[in-house]
Amino acid sequence: PLSLSALDNDSFHRCTAGYLPSASVAFLDEIFRANSAVLNGLLSVMNERTFHNGRQTETVPLKCVVAASNSLPETSDLAALYDRFLFRVQVKAVSDESVVEMLRRRLVR
Image 1 (cartoon, helix red, strand yellow):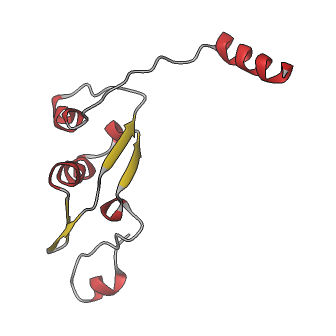
Image 2 (tube, helix red, strand yellow):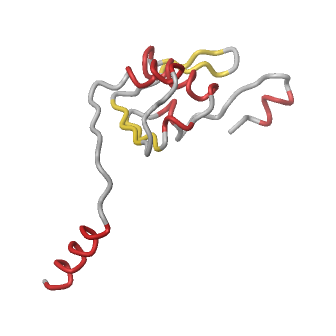
Image 3 (cartoon, helix red, strand yellow):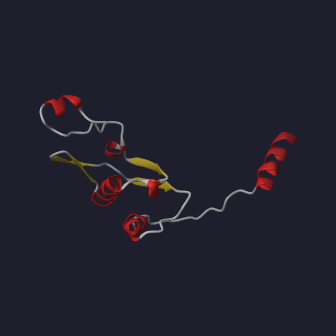
């Protein structure tokens, strides 16, 4: 969120406490659906551990990022972000039959 008091002083400053720029571990859901501004910010956070907040550059204490997506990147503009992940695991969808079997096993206990 933006700092409204900073806007009164013609300054664009985001409040980052409790958000990604202040995190040491992060989970990013549907990462490849983000807009280009968010993706550019993620690249600098993941690559350089910095976050550009108005006229200031903040150091990010990030140690680990885990991300999930229901789709893999299909365009070249997402390739740079995709390359930042050291481990990539593709998980197949759980079939309807498997869900029913898991529920059945749980109920039998």
